[in-house]
Image (cartoon, rainbow, N blue to C red; front, side):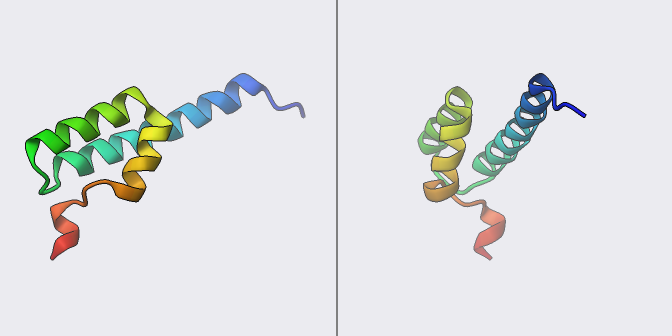
Length: 67
């Protein structure tokens, strides 16, 4: 059976989309200031993979994790 590169990249795209949505929801639910939230959202939106990785390492944490 031959792997179709288009279907593999489509699946990867869905994974990236899901991770970015998770990041955006977490950013908006964080206790960071509005300005910082806007900057993080723009970073994740315009640079989906790199922005997500930077957010994962250095981004604001959600308020649910700070209990």
